[in-house]
Length: 189
Ligand SMILES: [Zn+2]
Image 1 (cartoon, rainbow, N blue to C red):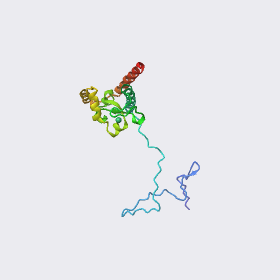
Image 2: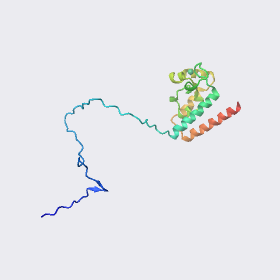
Image 3: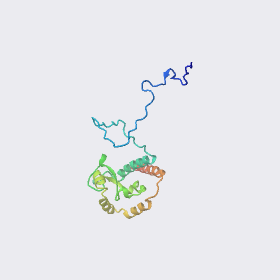
Image 4: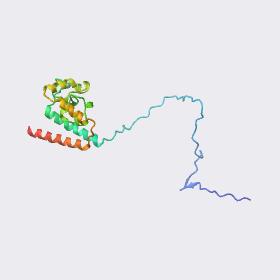
């Protein structure tokens, strides 16, 4: 008579069965047979998965932050020096969304990084002039010439600085310079 074989592997671990009930072993993943694909017929169309999480925004880099802060100070200084009237149309004392820091006479896209953040290349403009009229460069140019501004020198300055890398330090120093100027002007009044 043969002895009953002893079970070689335990069926429980910490009091819980390690053998799956009913279903037994894990089933093999279903592999669809090759051939003609039939369209899956559904009674109801699949509901779109609700997106509860807001889209993750990219964290601002120190450079982006420095640029934002510099532009903020630059705008405040431009307002202090040149006022809040639109440079290229008769609109006066602009507020909120209608009060923008516009780039004149060339649009921002034509300027070097340094010129973008240079006072001489910016004035306050209304939404229509800055956004809808793309900066209204022609009008700005005429006015600047009338005011005796050396536009040629500005162009040369832009060409000389175009493509030049601008270190983070430059943005910090420029902001410091503008803040000091702003304080000076505020104290003078
Ligand atoms: Zn305007």
